[in-house]
Length: 90
Image (cartoon, rainbow, N blue to C red):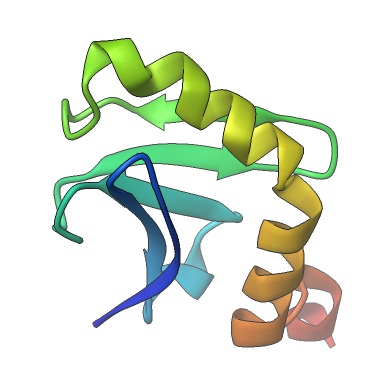
């Protein structure tokens, strides 16, 4: 089941309950589907990980800007949901 973080430009930005096994990332699509465009989120950047065409090309730049602007909030939500990488190593 996806956990929606926000709706921006008509797109859901979310992660799935089992996403905690991977590095921090979000999925973006119009209807919270498994085959959604994926973005890696790090302390220093946001990068397109996998473009599955769930985001219109004309919206890609604005979504990337939005994710970069809200990176700290996304990271906090991820760590709140899945825990930090340091906690998992203990």
